[in-house]
Length: 177
Image 1 (cartoon, rainbow, N blue to C red):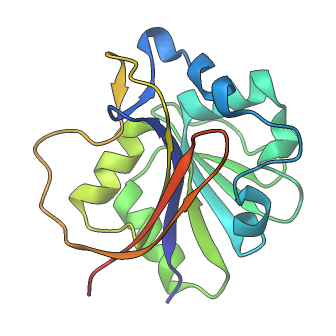
Image 2 (cartoon, rainbow, N blue to C red; image 1 turned 180 degrees about the horizontal axis):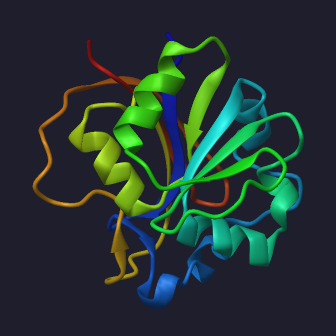
């Protein structure tokens, strides 16, 4: 059974974006040659799931090859279906159905890159197996919360925590079985 991993950054007060989807606070921990384990993490995945707003932001800031490098299947969860582009599928069906289907297939791990709506729907159905959360040393005060209210309680097992000289702390938890 494949696992679904969340690898995401948040402010210390729990926001993944400031108002108007502003991610500029992530730049305070940018450091030449430091990717906080992202490259190592992505060697163990072959499928990415993310929301359309996250996809559009990365497309604009980095480019489509960040996700679709010819080695991975990418599912952009959207309300409006669009034609497939390379290995990127714009999916408008049931998210939990898609994840259950993907988990039952052979392959490497599945990576959820956000956003909050996708994460919280996955949490509603207890589908996230591991949480790798990078905490940025800033209190942004307002914006898009990483975890929304009114979801089921879930026990997690602590795996480890890493600290970096930029002030970023990375927390790694697994879902308790």
